[in-house]
Amino acid sequence: MPVPILKQGEVLIASIQAALTDKDLVELRDELARQVGAYRSRGVIIDVAALDVLDSFATRTLRAIVYIAKLRGASTVVVGIQPDVAFAMVQLGLNLEGVVTALDLEEGLDHLAALAGRSGGRAG
Amino acid sequence: MSDPVLTGASQVLLREMGLNDGAIERRKRIVGIEPADVTRIGTIRDVVVPNVEQYTEVFFNHLAALDEARPLLSSRALADHARQLKKEHLIGLASGDYGAKYVEQRLQLGLVYAKAGLDTRVFLGAFHHVLKSIGVNVMKRFERAPLEGFESFMSLKKVAFFDIGLIVDVLVFERERTIRQQQEAIRELSTPVLQIRDRMLLLPIIGIIDTHRARLITESLLNAIRASRARVVVMDVTGVATIDSKVANHIMQTVAAARLMGAAVIVTGLSSEVAQSLVALGIELSKLTTVGDLQGGLEEAERILGYRVTQTTGGPAPALGAS
Image (cartoon, rainbow over all chains, first blue to last red):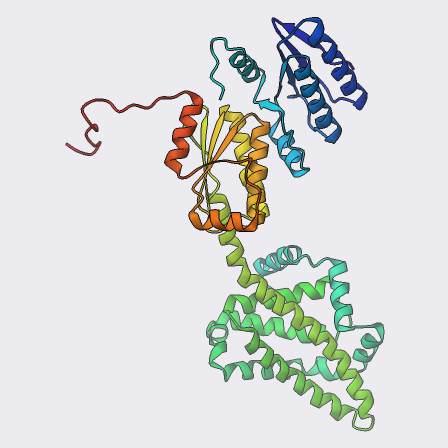
């Protein structure tokens, strides 16, 4: 099942709804890389709140998305990692280094707004 | 016959001590009980069973001479109960069937000793006397074939050692129960996650951090981060006396997990000794945001969240209790 990508102003929001196969993840990566350029987006938010597990392939792909988007001129925030998922990830040594994370979609948008130097930014 | 409360307790104990059929078989193998032993014990059963009263007397007479056994004998009910269980024990000893039911009876006896505060050495002394008098009777019976008698007695002794193993374990297990309960209480009491301001949490850590506790701390912190939508967490480790590489690793994991949920963690209260030992151990803490003390950590957290605390003019307000 492909992940829907919503365009909201200068931000692309990829909202993952169900467990993903490795193929879905690769498609998401490619599609985001394409759309960041196509829409001249400044920010990308990947919402993983619906996921019960983030394995090494998923974390690696997320990191790849972050770097690809950065090379294309957009900042990425991964939002909605659940407590159990976060705990399991650090146990496995998957710390998502170099990736900005936020509690939920709202926080992620706040962060991007602060980065863009707009109003309402409080993030540190 | 036996106390229903105690029967329940011994069944619970059987589970708590993990004495399933496999563990019981393993214990038998450790002392070396084999089918041949059961056969040999059969040949001396009529030396043991008809004289159970006598052996029980030997056991309790020995105890009666000892000051250390007074707690058991001073309570009439407890002493009678122990006497009854001891009799059952001696009959069971010669029965040849040493399964879960037999083990459970031994646990009951162990529980009575534990309740009376009977020390291992006291019980061992009395039990040795019982074995001695059984041994004497066995040797009398096998006067013409002493080797055969000795072998039968040694088979019985294997079972006796099997029993000693169980009873000593019960005594130790019961004594350690208090320690376990206290540890549990400390664990539950000492992992509070406190909200200091909107979107700001305080996690004071006190005492010893082991793997189990680190897990509890991390879990309660992560749930609190979600519940209060926290953005900054101040983790204060003033109350942690020593930090070794393992504890440092636990702290790093907690910080990493909090970050995955979008919360920044500020660690405060690393004492000079702790800081020195961490550096001496070469533990990589460069990814950690640290501030010297709790006050500094709270101020830093407020700065991150955009708070500015100012004192009102006119100095401190009157204390609440003042009239």
